[in-house]
Image (cartoon, rainbow, N blue to C red):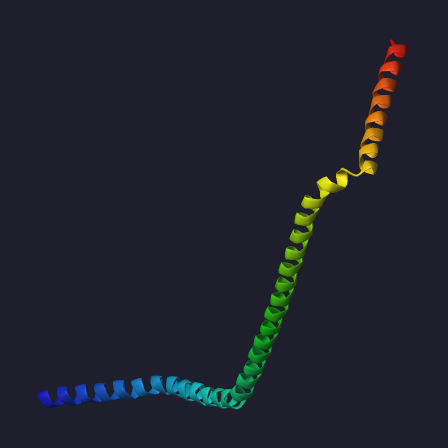
Length: 134
């Protein structure tokens, strides 16, 4: 009786092992397909990666070259602007020194008198015309 029970237990264990193997076969086949696809992908990547890296190096070199060129151009423009600023400041400083001397020339004093006279005539005409309207 004990021998029969052990025989049945061994048969059940063998059947369960066979069922487990049968259920694992599709999983193993899928793993094999995925590994095969990964091998193809890895080969493709290994073939194209050097050219991709070379292109990236060329792009990086071009960007670095362009950046250096732009920095030089900006520096030149900055230097030119600084020199122009110094020249303009010198001109303005000189005008401040010479303007009072130039204003003492008789032409400018008579020009100032003419402007004052025109303002006076304008005020006179405004007053004269306002009185007529009232």
